[in-house]
Length: 545
Figure 1: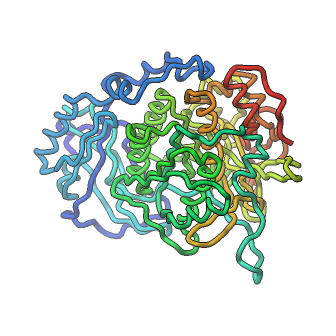
Figure 2: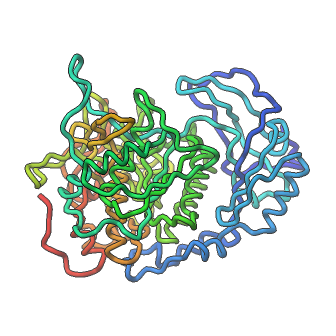
Figure 3: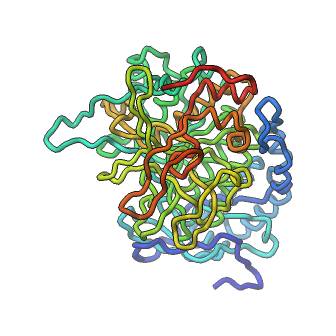
């Protein structure tokens, strides 16, 4: 055990053992790894609370910080970086990178040296979802770094991300190629997305945690739609590259779905695709990289991955680090759209309780739930909560047991959780869109045409709409949640979905109804009406279905 006179625990760094994991020996002490050390901001982020960027003010009244301004005020202190570097050198560690804007110092070294420096004991584990190197208990730092180091990521590399994607049910013995579905522009038309806009001048950031895309697929897909292929740039985070992996259940399907939905609705926007490891380290580094990317400067982020909340899953330091990165995005005018999950109220956890998905449960993101959309010609015929029933696929949503009810959601009528404690926390989702794989999206991936659904499709669907709105307004919408919940004209620009439930396996889920609910939030978009409401001008008469 670390000597409490020399090392103290980092608050929130405690890591629990993963249920179902069994020990498989100690890792090689000479194996070299990299860890990401997150430092405190030079100015407390609490000072952002009074800014208009986080208020219910309409976009034209908002004031955002540039990335350069944010880094100067809230980046890491060079003196803190120097203190950490001095300590690292005493333990034979190499400083690979130090970023003041991201408040991140990357250290490299042998497991034995890193473990000694941070008081960590590492163990190899076997698990049905994949073997991993893990730790339990807290991470420690010396007294001179107490309060300076907020978190350390990279010791534990357990899987921490799932794509929220669903494939349509195909009957045994039938042609395995699904038919039907919508093209993304058809869905956008049903939702009355504003015409004459293509997202020019905007960059949509897309986070991916595996797989990749092929330019040949993208060129063929957009040619088939009669659209120019958008400019797509792959950005490596922590050494993960754009690496297509063809095969059954390939993560390529997720990557291509995200790019093809966002790119076909906003073909004039640049798409920056950030590839990262599916670990807590990958999450924190990818989000910080995207938010602080001063080259591509995304104005909206699309995240179609997540993992259920719970102390056995996410560490408190990871939740804090991700939330702080999203808060930074809000201050800079960047909208973050996150899929709410595809497993209804249980979110793939089999403990008999309801769960929500993180990071869609973060108070700093626009959580995107799922509907089942039926059309008649060019009009919406019906729209209900997506719930496959027999397949278990349903719109993720519910009440967070870990994250408090945000102030901007206080008047939305968020009910107590269906779990025994009845906690009233962050309600998920905020909005919704077509996610039913039976009426899903036409996609080309690894040379094959397919139909895909899930809330994975809803995050890029909304991200593309935000890009169009930003283009139209000439200013970023930014952190839209306080506006959505605080401006009645904006709330009214959504198509309320009042029928259905996300209950699966009789766990006691949530039901749709008038106004906000824990299945589809305020509902699906009426894009043109939303542009008008956000601009603060009289609402147009255009309305879908």
